[in-house]
Length: 233
Image (cartoon, rainbow, N blue to C red; front, side, top):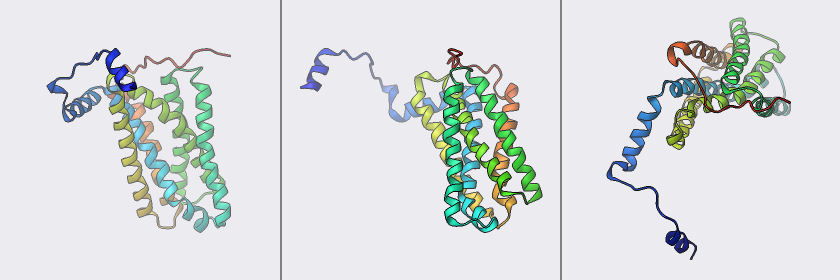
């Protein structure tokens, strides 16, 4: 009855045609996505972070228990700090989006991820560091992910309102594939050293920073119609 009422009273506004075959639509959506330099640039900012944090997740138990000698029970609390860092970053980002625009928040995210990854590069070079230093950098990286990834997603989708669903799928698929690759690589290169435990996270954050600094070449004229700044209390 409900479906009959809808069919009898609502007029179809979309007229399908032969060019809208699902595969043709998908091909057109991919072409549309990669025709926007801003969307491609934002995708590059998004895909590396998961590789960094999933690589450290893959070896975190070995890093914490084997190298630094913590117990399994202590490892649970230590690992929880990384998860809580993402929660804290998300809460902070919720406060920030009411006061700053998307581009400002992307810049903040890049600055924070560079702060974490640059320290991890030093730790990798030294191949030794106090645990509090290593894990505070990991937690800062995780805190940053909540800010950088959410606002980079807005930047990526802004030029693509008509294919937002497919565009979101492209972003999610790319992040999962690169993230899984980071986890596999992290497990493969782990050799019981601090250097190999943190090197992927250090590299992904540094490369992400380099990509952002190249935005005048990769995506000149960055903009986002969405204005996050609404009121200042």
